[in-house]
Amino acid sequence: QVQLQESGPGLVKPSETLSLTCTVSGDSVSSGSYYWSWIRQPPGKGLEWIGYIYYSGSTNYNPSLKSRVTISVDTSKNQFSLKLSSVTAADSAVYYCARGGAGGYDFFDYWGQGTLVTVSS
Amino acid sequence: DIVMTQSPGSLAVSLGERATINCKSSQSVLYSSSNKNYLAWYQQKPGQPPKLLIYWASTRDSEVPDRFSGSGSGTDFTLTISSLQAEDVAVYYCQQYYSTPYTFGQGTKLEIK
Image (cartoon, rainbow over all chains, first blue to last red; front, side, top):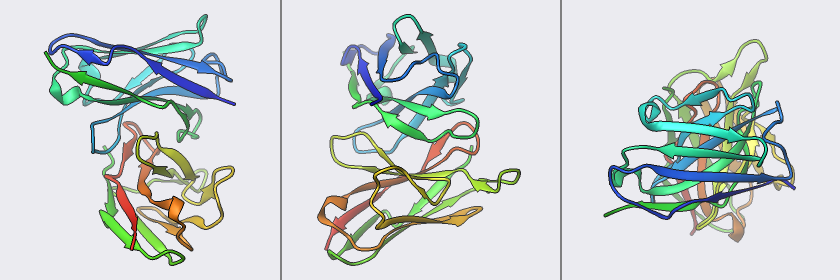
C-alpha cells in the first residue's frame, strides 16, 4: 500500500522559509510513472496545487508561487521536499504531498494526511 | 490558468435521494488525441485529505461505490450520487489535469437534509 507522510515545523515566522518533507513508502520516488506534488489548503478554504517534481529532478511550479518555491527529491531516502521562502500569514495552510501520474494520468491517487503550517511571529 | 467553477456551493439532500454537483471549466479539458476528459473528482471529509473518486471524468477509482458516477465532456461535468448515504457527507472538489497549473473547483459541501 502506498503511503505518504509529511513532516516539518508547524510554526514558521513571517519572512522565513517554510520547509517540509514527504516520506514515501510502498512506492519509489524514482519511478518514472509518477510526479510527486505538493498541494495546500488554507483553513476552511479550497485546494491549491503548488508544484511537482519528477524522479529526474525536473520540476513544474504554479506560476503564482514560482518565485518562492523549490521542490527537490532525495531518491536515497525515498523523499521529496518543499521549500517556500518569504512566507506571510497567507501561506498558513494544511500542506499535503500527493502522487500524480505522469503521461496524462495527472490526477492525485494517493495523499498524505497533511500537516498544518501556521505563519506567525 | 483553467478556472474551475462548481455549483452549488452547498447542497442538502435527504438520505436515499440523488445528489448532483456540477463543475464547469473555463476551457475544454478534452484531449482530442485520446478523446479523454482530464477531469477528476475528490471527496474530502473533515480532518482528512481528499480522496480520489473519479478520473477521466467518468472512471471510478478502485473501491469507490457504484452509487458515485461522473459524466460530461468538454467544459461541463457532473458528479452524481444516486442514493445518498450518511457517510457521503463531505466536501466534493473537481480538478482539471489538462494543463498546469492544475486547478480545483472551490468545493461543494454536501449535507443531509
